[in-house]
Image (cartoon, rainbow, N blue to C red; front, side, top):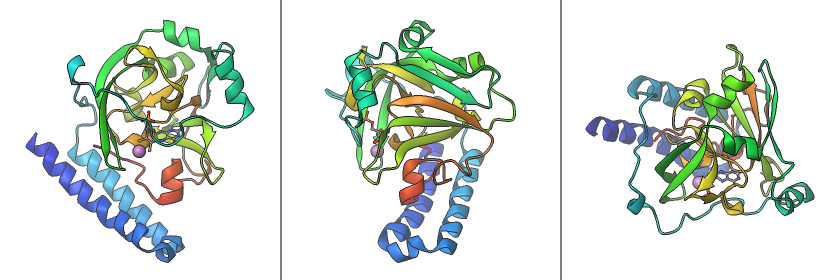
Length: 254
Ligand SMILES: Nc1nc2c(c(=O)[nH]1)N[C@H]1C(S)=C(S)[C@@H](COP(=O)(O)O)O[C@H]1N2
Ligand SMILES: [Mo]
């Protein structure tokens, strides 16, 4: 446990240094060279994590009575647009989860089929950078099962999660993780929260749980999982919406 605390403090210190500079000085944040340096610091942070942390370790799991009375929501609470509204009205009956990119067998899986696949249940704590945490029970399909079914290429290095919602600047929300987290047993595509169908505000019909990382990595409203060799050329190229617009760390280990 003390090893974990030491590592957390160390990494938090690095992240606070970079984040403080970025938010404290917008002009500096726009400067390409500064952004490049920050990218280097993030790379170092990721490497540090890989060095100090056992990436296969499980996140802490809790007992049912330790759950928070309610699991709040953050960010999008209802995706805009007629497509999502129609799916919601139809109970997601003709919604499909698309898995494509570097896979041998691209998939388009109905929600009923996802729910019929082997599921994992876990009671975990969600930590948001905005300063709140909550404990809840998630039920979902392990991502590894989905990637095996699609025949992911050994050359694919990252999984990109495309979401149904756009943010206030018009850019779509998206996130990405590496193959280590993709194969982690607690990395699931959740379709239930506290034993009920996933509520709209928490990402219905399907959201990522990647329990060793911070809240913004847990993409909601996931409709497409793309296997790629590189994150360059995907939206802003930094691997996620907040990474692109605000310089959040791509690897947000906790
Ligand atoms: N598609 C999408 N995913 C998202 C967000 C969002 O706005 N849109 N917000 C992120 C943030 S910052 C957090 S803390 C969690 C919040 O999940 P919750 O709304 O279920 O509490 O979702 C993350 N995933
Ligand atoms: Mo968050």
